[in-house]
Image (cartoon, rainbow, N blue to C red; front, side, top):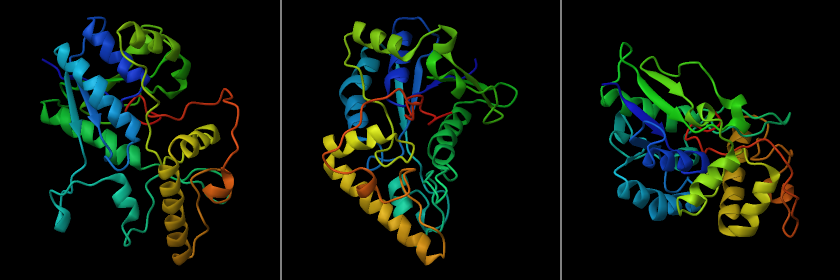
Length: 271
């Protein structure tokens, strides 16, 4: 029997898939949440999973597995590694998140591969997936985000599928499915310091979670200082070309315009 799992991000699309699995609408019984770290995931997402998604899965006989990156060699072998802790390591020379360079464009995004895709791939291999008998990994991309879907195989022992696309469902449909199941609609999932946030989301973070916004400013300053020591141009958490506290001023809010989604609801961070 082939391995079948849903990549669970804790957001609206993957929670809708959880409900659809409980209702027998999709043929998946295992959901895998690759947690980039309790200090890195947005606390609202972690709270939603703990208080709503996990109890719902248990009530309906679904398996919700949580994974975290662990050091594989050297002095950190066996040690849990979080994205934030790795970003703050003084000896680190690279930045695995897609910070915005001087020209405005985002840098290389390695966090998705290292902290989500690789963990899920290791788990499906552990469960018996092989290149000859690949795992089916369901990803929560909805019809309004069809541009994010890809037929490319991320790993030779996995094949991606998109149940929401197969059912012709949009994000608004996911919200309806979740509410009808008696669950609150979850917030969009993403690391609280993710550079892929829209300006409106940064303003929301500053308004709703001022402590996290302050920590994001401190993280950005650390990364800028590190790049200066290496003789490189500064890199920021927004594409606005200046420090976060200046780019997102206090007491100013933006209208929620229709912008491209930047969340990680699929569990694959902008796959």
